[in-house]
Image (cartoon, rainbow, N blue to C red):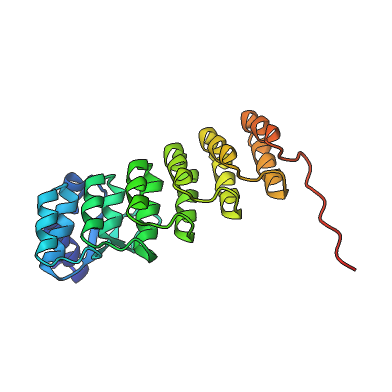
Length: 241
């Protein structure tokens, strides 16, 4: 049977970029990438952890913000673009992240969001440090998204790294991150957020405490109680006459 064009592209890119799990450690298949051979060489070098190869590709004119699109049936994000910086962050490759930043990789917009999110979700606290030290802004929506990703996955070290680099703990987004940590029974993450100042004395704190109670997480109930989370929902303020 003749292969479909889609499979032809997937197989070609998998071989060319080293995107199979046996070589990269990522269980995914590349379906689209830059057609520039220099960009392809850069992506392949990142996957192999080949820093001289990365530097050579960048010197030759590879785009540090190149991307690829991937398929991974176990990943809800499958089918979206992943930047070179996100790939390096996802793999926890600190040196590759440094090389890309030095080569001009963007630390704003969707490139920054992808890299921060990938490092946070995978628990690569050291990569997060490099991204922030390189210029990523800790007070952006992208950083808040990374905090939620780390919290929901129980990545306590990543949560502490995000907070230490200035991601605000006193926002509604941080409260949502705490609630995700409660749902997952990620005690260390809850503790880290509380120590950093995530507010639990309002209705959101009641919801978090009630979530813990309903799930039978007595340790979290006690932790939230001690932090001031109300046992009963606070009364809504009276409307102005």
